[in-house]
Image (cartoon, rainbow, N blue to C red; front, side):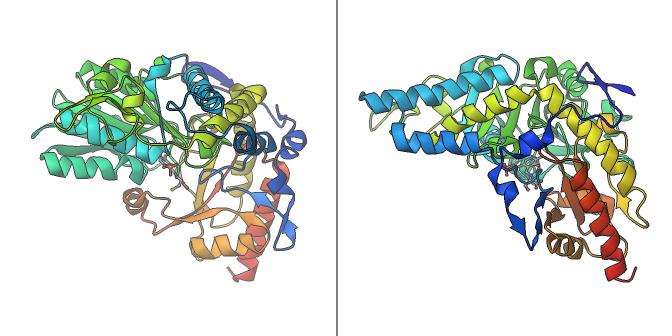
Length: 425
Ligand code: C6P
């Protein structure tokens, strides 16, 4: 089977895995512990991923040998810390397609990155009567800031609907993205449906109308090769903790010409050039947007995270997930009554698999699976409007990553079958 994804051919290989999962699993010490007397089967990767030992070591090593504040001190450790922090910025710039280093702003996560755009670019550029376009499948991080901004500015918030099979419905897009549209804010991959959205096509549509586009890459960057220049996005946000990295580290990519015109987000140390009691001038990019002391150790360890992912190869990671997703969907769709949300075509989706059972509440599904060592997430997944559209109060969600294999899927499927017997359905 072949399909196009971000202009790259993806081949669905039958049965063969491109990764040596046993070798990968060995890099993740946490996976060795039993949970509730069972082997841990970690399928909550869309919430956060586990960390390889090399990333944990890199963070420890920072505290053991380098720890100092950055961009301030002139002593040896301060210089080493600054260099290590800035090395990660260069690495991130290369990792997402070779952008300028000053276009990479470190934040504490995707949520903060999107809020940064809403509170700076949005405050400056959205006016009464303007239109902001989002989609019905947005995570609250890419929804709440725009709802609030639209209310404050008396702008109109419009949304691209989702089809019953979990795709964006672009049939009326000319009526949704218009000459009044200032911003299109859209998730690259849905954390509920798994859908991979056609960001490059949407970017073209937005730009044709004079609007800009923000991509929420929280679920995409960990799982796909992402090139922001190929996608044509103006802003793009993602989190390190969903891609084997530390918590408390996120990235906002923004085109230099936009970042330069934006006011700062947080005010304080290190984001200024000159300060008097009457007047302040801002630091150069990217420092204008990085007030205060950031998560230095986390950012430094994020460099090792990127090395780890590159060693495996993002194309291979995508290929592995397609193969495993194919295996999982084939089995899950065989279980009586189980309803899978989102596209069933593996080449158009990622490994977040939301499902429901008509007779068993998702929280009970999660609790039952946990008793067998299987970690999934149940709830609204921070996408309440989408849940309403799906007519569900919640879903159970199993989400895959590089250390998952067929044994994990078999364990999930077997436990779900046992669960149905246990609950007498
Ligand atoms: N989704 C999930 O279980 P933060 O928390 O800032 O790192 O990421 C927020 C975020 C933004 N966009 C998307 C598409 C996301 O999936 C998330 C985080 C987790 O689905 C936690 S709610």
